[in-house]
Image 1 (cartoon, rainbow, N blue to C red):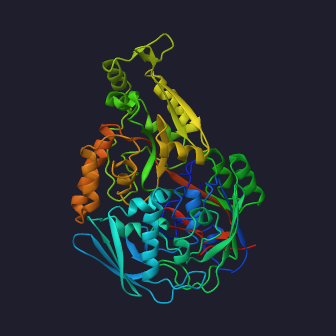
Image 2 (image 1 turned 180 degrees about the horizontal axis):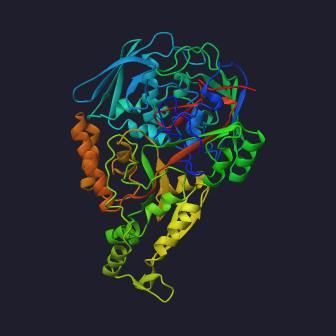
Image 3 (image 1 turned 90 degrees about the vertical axis):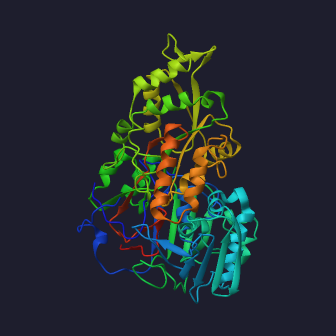
Length: 531
């Protein structure tokens, strides 16, 4: 696979065609390696799914967030090294207890409706996200303990929390906390989702959104506040970006080969070699955050027994899973992806251990029947994994692996909307997904009983650790708390990680400077095309 160096800060979006959120080496022979940028043209980009919403404050799916990133700017930007840099905020101060964040805004930034991007707009956005509640599942989690925003003048916003929130500064770099016009913050959430009332400050604006078909973004004229690390200033180069919804992997491959699309992050691993040169380039990165997991619903009787959860985890051969993914992919090593700041190495806990899995299930009273599947009190050891991602290879391999110890794992694929509804209602045995974020606090977002509580479990020691790491400003102490939390999540099998999210972008050689930012989303501002 030819690789190109990422030009800004992030990881991309798809793993052998998974979407939820390392680097390569520059290939000087690629078309994007040199040349003078050309303004104009449309870039057509294929995405896998349409979540029915393009409001970045309301969505959590990577495809939708990649659209939303072009529409909104953020207070800060995160670079490749994980450092938070200026964007709409030129500077800031954080109080010693990480409860108060004072942002000093740059002059002249506006929303696409002409209204000023000032401290009142910052306040309206943060207050509005809190008001959205569950509709803003990611953004509201970043604002846990938010008590308000003071606006002593138009250029100063003072954000306060009831408890320390060390993670908040990095959160301000995400598009989930990207800034929308004041009018948008109080608009009907549904009209924000369909783009009708969605007004941002970014380099592109909504042109047209046709559900389950395409999203067209248009260049905004007069844009003049690109983030630190951008390759140019002023308007974006591209006139338009067209995101085509193409669910079928074979169609995406054929569309890129034939020139019907310019780029995608959704080429399957087996098809990637076709784009290794010959007029195309590819780039792979490892995403930070929560790896693809089985999240067991511990309110279900079968998963209330820790031994069953532990046996399921031990039965999984993660090295074998990694071997069928993209070149360069490695086995998952902790409850956090390895590229996440402060991610520990817990690979010993995740070792493949068939004997250990069998011993745990024997101890728990599950005995193998003639068909090889275990049973207890007349009930089979069978449960269903719910997922929406257009993939089968990894899950089918896991299905085979766990059957070796007598577990009957059923797979149930639904639409994004159906799976999200099940997740929100808690109506599942176990659910499969990931979450990209370049901060270890992502674990609190997913697992804490005070946040998403994906396991539907009672409060325990791990929740205290997750809360403490979010409040700790000392880097070494925070890293230690993160390591303790990861170890508990794995040993108690609340987290059953399978594979890390690795994203590979494949594009035609006439696509140049397609960049990425620190929360693993695509960044089209510097992108340009040659004919």
